[in-house]
Image (tube, rainbow, N blue to C red; front, side, top):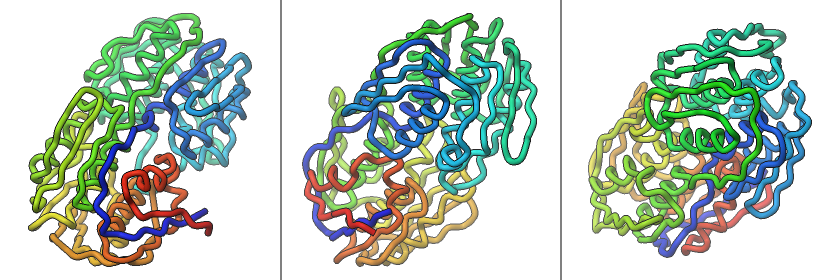
Length: 416
């Protein structure tokens, strides 16, 4: 447990190199459970969610070795019950269900935890497994799934759930026959998982489109792989430059993955320059207000919603953001208002009146992306701010204070 001490009103400038994507690395670690041998994953971020997932894998019998940004996984010996405390610390750990069900025929997992940003039911995952022949029961707040061997199925999701798409896709790689996932999520991280699985010997196609087809195989091997850059980390740092009136570049990115955010920033008047593998932004004399709605990829990412709301406090006029993915993702707005922001949530929408002069305050991070928004607000505020409970931020941002210090921010980590 620690805190950030932030002194605001220092325009940022410089370059930040972006790490591998949290939402890809965690799922690739899980997908390795399907294979045999030793995996080498490059560009893996050193964040607490990765450390938690490493703990889950170790408890399942996997040998895990982390050096710099290289993660080595030996999956020669795998068993099927996950540790309850670790699963409840991170929702992504429920992704072990698909791989373990496919490999072992049985899996037992605690109900998952994670950020409290709204209801994220598992019914889409479980219904998909049942269509593939699994028997699922709930025992003392745990899910137990069994299937001697899964079989292919034609599955249509009622919503393009990222987690369910990944879970069913991984399970289907070793199912008997063909599985088709319709209304699949299209996020870039899902393409990463497809490429990883195919490197292991799977037969998956269609990731990045609404229809994914998987032809099951009997056995999978190992592969080496480099994780795709983190588009949410990149977006957060682009906003850090703009909210302080500065300019800068994020490098080691895939600009196409940032398109919804970059379109919004250009509409707000920011200068945006795209080159191969990097994006630069320049602050305008005045940011313009906006209207935007979150949505499944390629829509505007819900994981950038809190950070964009923070930026809107420094835009001229009334901005409106609609949240259609999660139903409880505005808790951070109470904290931003402590800085002097004028933000009013209303059901699934939030209204921001700008431009407001922010002043330092004592704040508490309640979740990962909301915590990042508080850091952005503090960077724009006059005076000093203290941000507590930054373990939420550490879940998805590697050494955020060091990265920001490198481009001129006055931020330091304090022991709690």
